[in-house]
Image (cartoon, rainbow over all chains, first blue to last red; front, side, top):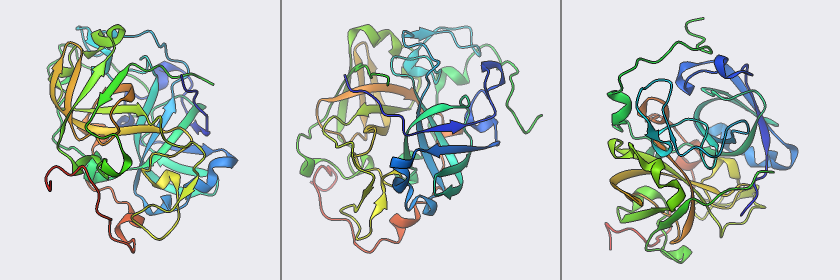
Length: 157
Length: 157
């Protein structure tokens, strides 16, 4: 099986699960994506983009999760219907606003991972293929339990 | 460095680069995502979702690409401003329409990878965090060369 390569780290204010935002739009804290020296030339032209997709390795997440009852629900769902970190390949995904692109990384909004999370990839966000404003997640809309309070929500703190 | 786990395969009509669609919206061919037995319980609740994000391993792609001149341009760009398959971690990403969810996988539209591509993850698409209809990719809008003709475009064939 192929091995991943860490190409950098994501710097956020969050080190404990209870402080992390529940999802990336719950926070507008500015975070830094550090790109290691061998990969920095790959940032060329990214400053012409407004949004990027970050892929990162959720290195604290379990890999033996197939079904799960999320904290926001009373029903058990399949892991492929959830954005929970624990999954067979714990690859995190965040669609971020690009605030600035520097020589050694980028500054972004709307990341919800732990400080120091290993970076795997950065992709430009193309609205033509990536934006589906009418997409629905049925189980999430009809779940019984309201979302519990959690940290990281800068707008409320 | 962590090792990936293949959780299934993506079945498409394309076996050669020249037949693949240039991007996922260029094709509306119905494709099958096969999920291996140990992970099938993870599909529960996915049938309530309209769209999913597939992550897959581009096992034919080079990993030593940092800059590239895409076929659609005359200018060299950083790999992180491109959706080209070759990159340090060649993880492919497609936002797909879910046509049906079966016991052993799902049927989707808008995949552009080779037949047999190893599957890494399936995530539900949440419009609230994933949809950015106003996102722009500046270099792509202003590039000099028009896109070359290519295969896989069912609407034209």
